[in-house]
Length: 266
Image 1 (cartoon, one colour):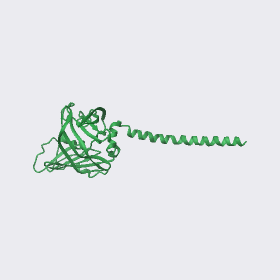
Image 2 (tube, one colour):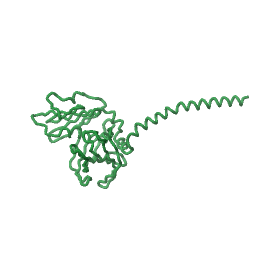
Image 3 (cartoon, rainbow, N blue to C red):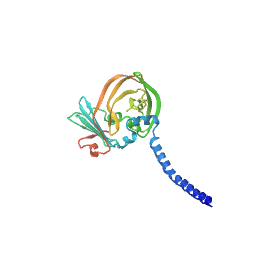
Image 4 (cartoon, rainbow, N blue to C red):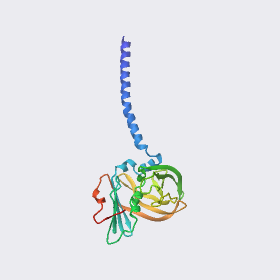
């Protein structure tokens, strides 16, 4: 009789434990699947680079970015809304803006704006926000032959764009990174704006000077290199970035709108 009772109790307890385990499994599975969804949308190679610079998820939390470059004619201050890509570039001779739909320029000191506004829109931001802008939609990734420079070898990733993405969807980039740390080291890029076809000539920027802000590793300076046969040869010039700020808060949205005295860029 006791054996029967014990056996019955054991069966009930075992059944209860079994049911309890079953009820926990779906929750754990869902959590694992959620993690896989957020981390598997990018290839392992580019994810390694993102992680070395603070993580793409951390970057995606940010809403505003500002940086200043010292130019021969004075300071050039760029401010970007990272979600809408609205942009304001302010210099002593002109202010150029993009409100998310329309582009405009405000000339100062009676000096006509002589640059190519459409080409310059977003240009320095794109170089500065590497590698994170390579996480934008409509991008494909492909592992390529590594770059060897000064006795060191850097694995490479070819970046291409789907048709209709951005002003120059034919542009291509080659990102080279440190295979030990994952840090971005070189960027090869083509210039196809207004050409209507892909270019085979890659220009080169070296990234080897970083600063950490809000947990993100961002450029402190960049070195532009001369190139030959799609390989960097010697340093041409350096651009430094000061007064860099990045924030999760959105500042005054009105700053991107065309002032009354400004003119639209057609």
